Amino acid sequence: MVLNLLSLLLFLWFPYVGNEPADATMLFVGDAMQHTPQINSAKQSDGSYDYTPCFRFLRSQIEAADYSVANLECPLGGKPYSGYPRFSAPDEFAVALKEVGFDLLQTANNHTMDKNDSGALRTITVLDSIGIPHVGTYKKSEEGDFNDVPHVANVGAYKVAFLAYTYGTNGIPVQSNTLQVNYINEEKMAADINVAKRMGVDFICVMLHWGIEYMNRENALQRDIAGFLLGEGVDIIVGTHPHVVQPMEMRFNLATGRNSLIIYSLGNFISNQNDTNSRGGALARVSLGVMNRALVIKDAECDLFFVQKPDKKEANYRLVPVASPELLGEESRTQYSGFLKNARNIFEKHNVNVPFVPLATDVASAVE
Image (cartoon, rainbow, N blue to C red):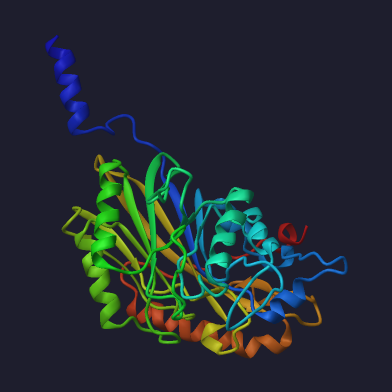
């Protein structure tokens, strides 16, 4: 009896002694957009849309993670499809994101309401129909509430709560009481985080659409919001919206007694933007695990990729890891060099405990 009681007490104090779960990896990318030239390039002769070529050189990295997340910055508002300034992307774009390995899409951003309530609600319906979870916008259930706040996922052996918020929706308000869009608000975020804590999750991840477009450094408001969230016990903060990369930082969080990760901006995932710094984006890899009998973020690292626009090699857009410049067309090499130089400079000067680790692409397997 005494030995059994002692064993129970040891388990409560050190739950992972002799039974540590394997590490799990998460992957985050930025703004998945659909400008008009992208839509036109994906259109097939039968009227369908094919995005397969876009992601093939990053597919292995996306699939290798236990859980991969992107920001869907274009509603699936139905026909007629449109690009900037009020997006409506083909449903096939979301299908392609799922097929390439994404497990969760962020839907709270400044373009959420581009096609008004109907477009935002249709986006939720389409994502539900293809079986890809989403976070940041919600449709009222038949029971009269907004479900899945937070979204809790199994990432390997760990339970992770995901929440998402946006600074605004380009001045287009929500009109329907059947739609909820999460806006950045300290009271709302704190309440949602407390719900996650009561659910007994292992880690809390908050995705924020924030900051100033095309600025390579975070601003004071971003730092203030990040500080607030860390104080509430958030483990991972992932930023989007600036369309360019901003610094990443891993630091000890007094509120949780373990490291927390702040990613101020991942830049673009895929888009038709032309400025050198917006021609690509960052990919963040995060490792969750157990260290000294405690749940921790073990490490984080980042990679970069470049958006190759249609050229003589191919009629569609494609994402090229920066470690594989041989995949680029001649006309893109100058912008590629500028993008890589500027992004590396940001990371090397301002990242804290998040190294830049480029991974080469197995071109042969990617093309097959």
